[in-house]
Length: 235
Length: 266
Image (cartoon, rainbow over all chains, first blue to last red; front, side, top):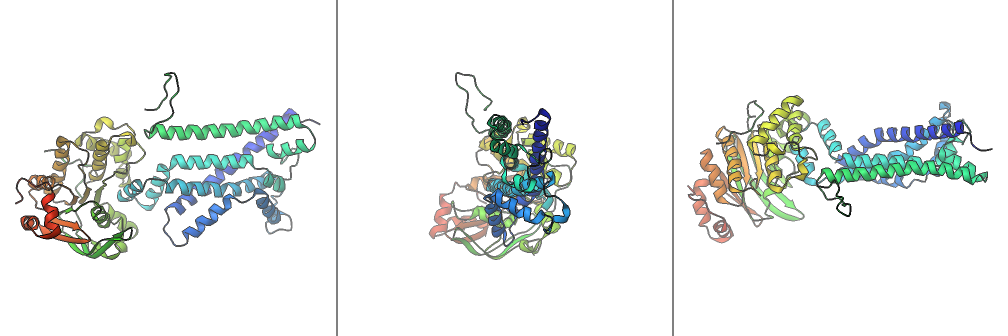
């Protein structure tokens, strides 16, 4: 049986809630952590960074499996009752998003010009002011990190399937619904769902592009001009 | 004479700065060793030397932005390395540092000056007002709303200069601060430094031109100490002894004789 409009809406809304929620939670944890690791001179920071970077490549299916074992009724976190709930999917997506946002924030901080970092330190900020100043100066890179994190949670299927269970009307997301429709041979519906997913991914990519362009323009760096004298907004 | 821009408060008292047996290396090359120097409150020092001799590194050491490989840099009688937390922040705020390549914030020109003022507790409106006055003092107030990264080299240097001096630090650390400036604007900045010295402030000025040093000396009526970094060694002297350094045999004399000379060294 084909998806009803109400069911489609429910899937789209749940997907938005999970991906946006995971991005926000991942940002709340990943941005401060990445900034701290980017600025930190404490011993062992290299090891922590290496762990963060290695988690980039963590296969979502493995993350889903580990979370499943933790969240199942007999597992150590079974008492929370998160398995096969939207909260369980949110947790899985957040855990997959954190390393990306953390790692890309470390990179954004590290890419700031050394003379800028020195100027911040020479200005006499408190440790809190210094932290805010670095985040502010690396804002374009950090916003890109957030959008990449959002893109990952949008594209992810395996962990959502294992932890969420793809329960109709409860934990079915766009990604798991596509799988379901393909398994049923309903390719037309699968394509409609894929189109919605692609539209969201394209919107994310467009935002990233605009962000990078805005940074170049505000920093006075050249951007590609339109042809035939249409001009652009580059200085 | 142009008045030094300020936030209306008193200038912070300059700390005594002393290098004790300091050695520094950069990329495996020893820049200098066993450096002993003192900049007492109200004194100023000029650092001369060819490119790569360690002038900027020395400024960074004095500012506490770099740790020496050996020895200590004492500020107010205590090593930079031992200052932590509020003590370190408080000491940092006694210094105003102008980099050779200014690291301006990715923000408007006005914000570049207002941010460090707000760090010091000035309310937003007051910080903006003071910042605007300081920009006017160095002739870049018309750029206030522009992104600082879009400025020319000379404009950047003047914004960085205004940013360093606007909180009225006790000691200025200036790394070739008149780079990219025409004569009129260089005079303007030198005048502000001279006024800072006349009012009892300290300074360390990296220079390539004895005429530049002499103009500040004349305008401030305060003679500098001179430190020459050359070939991994250092040579320090008073301004009045400069002629003997210029006349000296060997590499130091040869280097000093190649510098653009002041009109009258004494």
